Length: 499
Image 1: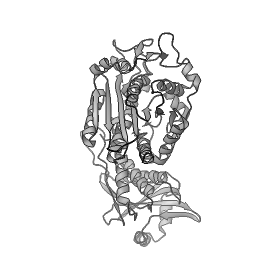
Image 2: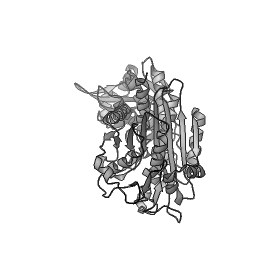
Image 3: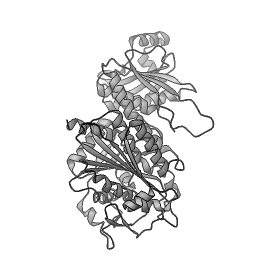
Image 4: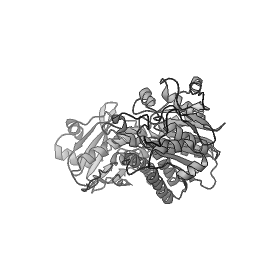
């Protein structure tokens, strides 16, 4: 699992025992300008360097360009992080703080550091942005080894004179902790995280957050007619699970259901993936990780909204008991599906969970899944797709994503996509007749299992859920915790709207 997140607090001035101080560099109207450098610190450095601090920082590579960082060693040392323009957005400071904390960790040298961040944060959203970015940037999944290394960042201090800084940092901590929990689950090796152990982890979260929980095992799933989960999980010695978590505060008016794809490892089944395509398939449960982590954060924040989270958990393996292409499956509720491709397994477990979730009569259903490679082809590795029952619902998701700093793009579900799912032997086929528009076809399939009149959005996070390249901003290599912040932001908006 990850190193524990550092402690974080607010202070009106830079602590004397800080090992590193993070300040910003921005493009002002008359050229680059340092942001957040206290007068006493600037005077100290001016005496030490005999040249202006800005010139010294630029000499070691500091720039206003976002994503750049430079470190000036000293006591305290300075980390100068690029902010872009001087009129910063929450996402600008989130990224700048994340970059700075990663840079600080890189120079820890076996020590555990106390890092102060002075970026002139006053507005509530900016204070939260600094705190979130710092915490997310401090995340590191611990290598499994006999020699455990100390965490490089032990504590974080946000230097701010904002009156409500304590509350803003508490909110940022709840959200960042949830994102990092989702990252942990995605990063955990699949021999350690599988349907049973994932369900156990959800039980632990439910106890901690005082959530109601129900876990259906393979016997209950068979009795209940969950044909998608039973088929996909049938090839594995580790049977499937369906997890239901419920947060229902007194006085809540709006009810939202979150449904997550939880394929704890995806070989492709009998439609076996190539070897290279399997290497990161422990990530195929990122949707389930997102919805479980998000409901935990929503409970921490005590948002006045009822939320039910569903995690459809299975391991897709080839064996003598594996389901086959051309099998006909009966999804929860009775709709029959002709299986076209056993590597299109996610939509089958999601169909079961969506159909069941709609029985609870939520006003809105959001499903989150690493569903299609086609979404990555369309939008790249850092942008998720959103497809919805209507434009208003899509706009709600996009607004929440923008507020939280996550990148989503609205894609359509053309009517002809449903026609391509016709089957001669079942109510519908699990995939279309052509490979074009695969993300849209998958969404059209899922829509068939959403109750009539229920607002619904499908979030395909296949690209941003996993970062296979170097870390950047506040995003680590590996699991990213994609969609958690958007789900929490949307819950906050809907709770406010319902008052």
